[in-house]
Length: 320
Image (cartoon, rainbow, N blue to C red; front, side, top):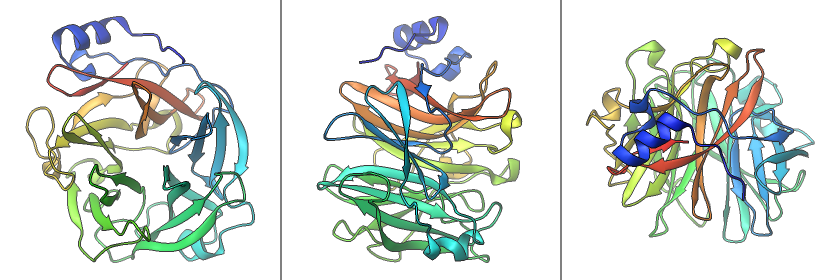
């Protein structure tokens, strides 16, 4: 299993005194990854046969594989023959956004979004595969859509399955913020028409997106990205978090501010040559909690970032 270098001040403060990485006012560099490291909006699942499958934003959804969570290799596209069903939302662009991949009931399950930049005419679709390999994915249809007149945006999906077996999909970007809808586990589609508001901002163009809900130690943690991606080295994305005892919220940050009131505790932000780290995803790998994200280099390239998550004495995550 790979080992990541601990960053002195941050980790000592976090582990000994129980403060977060934000309190330590310094952040670690991404852990070592090699090979095919371009990534935007990454998601990783551990394969039951061993190794890892990564999916990212790209034409037909870009796939990569790794045996050790360090070296990544290109593995083709989920949909190499195009996605005509998504064209009405992408204006014909082949790029699909922000896939979310997990392994459920003997198959890979992927939620992904179709949109165009700056538009709320968007849709989230579901696809499944028994192998996860390029070209093996079957589109299962529309899950949820938003329109040009919606005050929310159907992008950036994340599936969370509770300990009791309930399926929930968080989603959203800008507009009125992050939403949560309940799914039917047997179909992967919406269980009803209800929608819960999880987080909203009122500054910086209301920029909150890329939700990811992770259960740990009796809490649900809502990870999101604040501010702006997609601007190369000028990107200002940063990873924020709040928590709740219920998956439906309310989520509050470390200071007690509700995320629906703009709250969020920062755990990772740009530093040195690491620009705009964001679009967080978290998964369990053995005894480790792993944070996956993208960031931009000085040259403006989007790269895969992987670090570990630790937990303070007050049960708040920090990055190391």
